[in-house]
Length: 118
Image 1 (cartoon, rainbow, N blue to C red):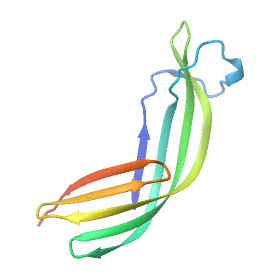
Image 2: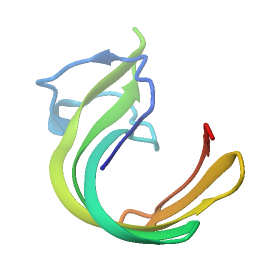
Image 3: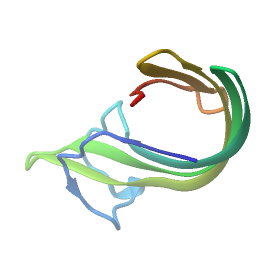
C-alpha cells in the first residue's frame, strides 16, 4: 500500500462559489493543484530484489488563481477522481533499501530510501 499527496500552498483568499464568467481581474498562468492517490498492489521478491505493480485511486482538485487590487484570489476550476497504475523495483543493500517507482499515466516518479535495522 502507498499513499501520495502533493499540493502547492495556496496563499490566496479562497472563494468556493466563485465562477470564471464573473472574473474582472487577470488570471495567473499557473493553476493551484492538489492530488492525492491511494495505491494497492502486489509484487514478487527474489533475493534482495523485488518488483511490484500497484493500482491507484485518486482525486485531483484544481483552482483558478488571479490577483486584483485587494490581493490574490482563487476559486474552483475542477474536482475529479481518477484511476491509475504504477510499477516499481526494490533493492536491498546492507544498511539501506532503495525503491524506484513510476506512474506513467500521471507522469509521476519517486525514489525512496529506507534504513534497515539488521
